[in-house]
Length: 296
Image 1 (cartoon, rainbow, N blue to C red):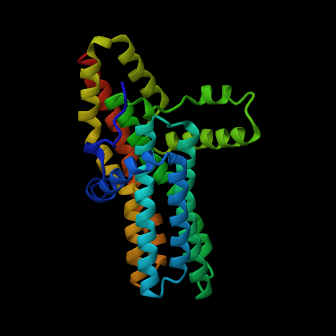
Image 2 (image 1 turned 90 degrees about the vertical axis):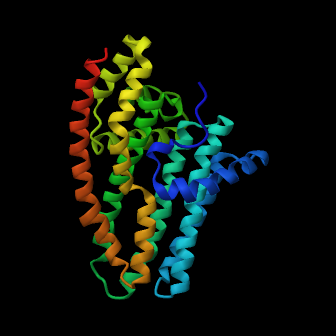
Image 3 (image 1 turned 180 degrees about the vertical axis):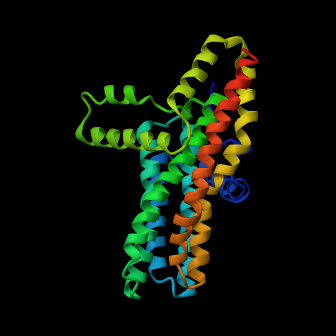
């Protein structure tokens, strides 16, 4: 079965669904016609992200704050296009997934660095400790959200491009790889481990679901429908962790002249929300297991 080019609508965040991805979708066939690869699109998006960092370094100038916001919007558009292009051209790969994640982190690193340098020049001596905490929490929060999306696409719709690799298989595949591929694979292994530990999704639950699908192939549609009914509302709630809201929060904080507020938003608001979502996920796993037994 060929995976759809567009992302799953019922769990898509509203600003993506009605603004970012329609623009991305308009660009994708044009990129494909010019043989532009998904990785090139990812790197282009990253360049917009780096430019956003330079602009936000001068956030006290409202025009530069607006420029930073526009550059981040352009990054979002490229970020939405690379995955669609990969699915359209069937050129998705594990390295491409890692590169996409790296480009995302470079974008926010650039913006965080630009704001940090600006704030440190204004006498915020403790700003780097606050930013470091925000960076670590950002990585945990966003990786957990992406795993939630991937798991929904894989188990709920059977999208093979969203399949999460098994860590044991990834480690076994390290043999014979080049130095660069080895480093990238190690990064990917660490990333997958972090995702699992911060999302409320555990290996035992995934194994039981895989076994249920394998042992009851005549009820595949029922099992996937049950999965979608159980988890779709929860995945929509997880979208509060998506990059779009950080982009908006950064812009609002900068226009207000207090970018430090954004970092406290990351630490003091998104982190407690993440903890609540993880607990909710564990309860949903239990509920799903009970309901699954009723249909198999």
